[in-house]
Amino acid sequence: MELQQLRYVVAIAEERNFTRAAERCFVGQSALSHQIKALEKELGVALFARTSRRVELTPAGHAFLRGAQTSLEAADRAVAEAAAATGIISGTLTVGVIPTVTAIDVPAELGAFHRIHPRVRISMRGGGSDEFIAAIETGTMDIALLGLPNTTPPRGVAYRLLAREQLAAVVSTSHPLASRRRLSLTDMAEETFVDFPEGSPGRAPSDLAFSAAGVRREVTFESVSTDLILELVRQNLAITILSPLVVPPSSELAAVPITDGPTRSEYLAWSSFNPSPAAQAFLTGLSENEVLPR
Image (cartoon, rainbow, N blue to C red; front, side, top):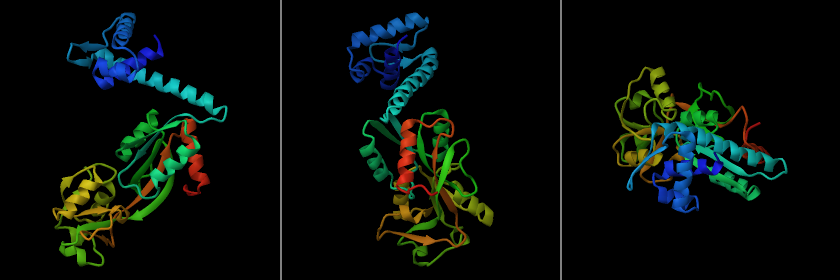
């Protein structure tokens, strides 16, 4: 079994097509097919169910894929650590960013890192804090920007608190509440809300605040997209609670402070067990630029 065969398996599984997988791997389709058949013969199982029009992983293929991905990640890590021993940082830096991050200018920091370490491949993913923490713990993500309730710091990862902020009510400027200088949670009890999905870290600060105040609210719309949330508010279909810093300057949106409103904390998280050379270099750069609080 060779690493290249593992790369072929991953490519076919992701592309679901031998032709596209061969193009991605810069190899002829017949050569790729031959290597897959040889691997299946060595393993004694079929990894793919295929016809001329369709390719899918078999149950054995699904099981093998996980090990193949882990093996390839370990091989890439070995190359990166060997290069780092000579002072050259390479490999991949995978960064998770929540849609409401405000404490760090992520594009600027990644740009500065790339100029210093051009051999590092940078990958950025969107998503939620819980999935980012799980990805760091399993080694599939290096760094993540998280947003969590003040009472719930990250677990299972190393982290640094970046900022704490008070969230605000965001309403359409045509909404009656837009003229208020400040609001309470009770003032919003009868309103229709749009928020992040129930149970998600992005929504947790608001749910906790309403629960603590003994106020019930109706969340009619749910979305993982901040842009969609703001667009629903702009259309006056609902109101929401967000960081005022993610609300773009607009004549159609207003951010109103909430006297007893929710707060949230932003964290930078990374592996507490064995951070990659690229992750260590990125953290060092943030510290040197005084982005990370001491």
